[in-house]
Length: 355
Image (tube, rainbow, N blue to C red):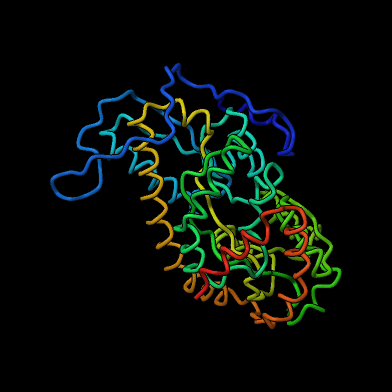
């Protein structure tokens, strides 16, 4: 497996789903993983795992200093704890196995077992996955968590697995996305013709096109030099991704737009998951859920501090009017509903959880 990802197409639509590879396993398929036993101490966990040993590869595109890598580390720690060290994973951060699009495609094909990525990255395969990235859909991260914990999101995960071959083990936060630029942004008018880097994800491209920008999809690893050389004037990211990549060195302003909520989902090839012994399936799922809970707390706790640290780097900070940006991007919702028969129902499900 290793570094064969270089030959993968960045376009997620391409290629048929392949059976996953790895160590030879005797599949024991089940519709539902077995429940974990409860220890005498009252903690959820398995008292003694007696199944096979598994060692997975987990690649992601963020730097090792980013909290996404902490999410991966939490997951590995829980895997080893619940299995007595018999189930583990090796983490490959910072795009070692490929960029975000390549890793997601590799999990779909089965040439990579696991990745951490956002759900809109699989929307080319299953367009309802764009629901997470619709502009101004979520009020805050607590609102998002209510959706994650809802029965509708549980159904949604099954729909994604059936349509794409990618199983969502758990989902957590990257944060609310903001705009960083060379000149201050105080209104939608300041966005017109702005050359902005966006991920190669349709809902992001469409959002900034609606705001009048000239969008340029660039891999995360190339953002710094693209700003430095003037290929783009601006970018949009959650504060942590901006700060840990030292992008404050090549930008001068931050606009607190909170235009899109960005998730970080732990994904596994669905055929691989179904091939695991039932007891191992239960451990993988519980480890993923526990890791997500820890990671959500971490991201929420650090967000305000990160914004303060960005200000300390000398960036001019503006707070453009929320309503103006929301109105300008309304067409993105309309297009989502037009492309997805269940689009309005999905939006209504999310909005019903707003407090």
